[in-house]
Image (cartoon, rainbow, N blue to C red; front, side, top):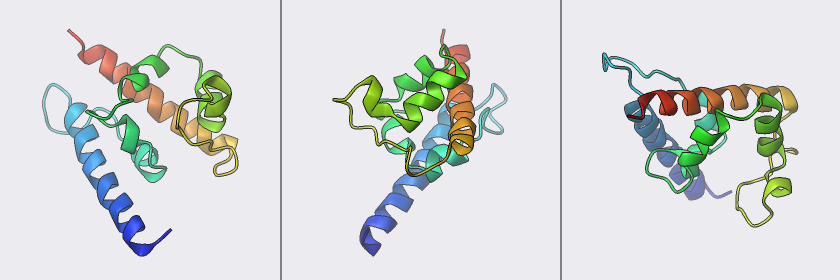
Length: 116
C-alpha cells in the first residue's frame, strides 16, 4: 500500500471515529455510548460508519449470535459472494474477530436503543 493510500485510510478512519462517536452519544452528550477502536483499526468504518452504505448492517448484527457475526467477519464471502466486504480469515484470528464482533454487536444494540 502506498504512503498516500495509508494516509487517506488513516484520515478516513479518524473521520469515521468522529462520526461513530457523534452518532452513538448518550443522552447526556458527554461521551460515546460505545467505543469502537477495532472498527477503525480494521477499516470497517469505511463502509459501516453513519452515512456509509452499510451502516444499517451493524443494527442487524445485534440480533445475530456472536458465532454468526464472527463467521461473517472472517468469511463474508460465504454469506454473500457478491458483497465487497473483505475476508478477514487470513488477516485476524478468531479471538480478535470475537472482540470485533462484540464491538459490532454493541454498536448495533446502541442503534436499536436510539430508534424512536
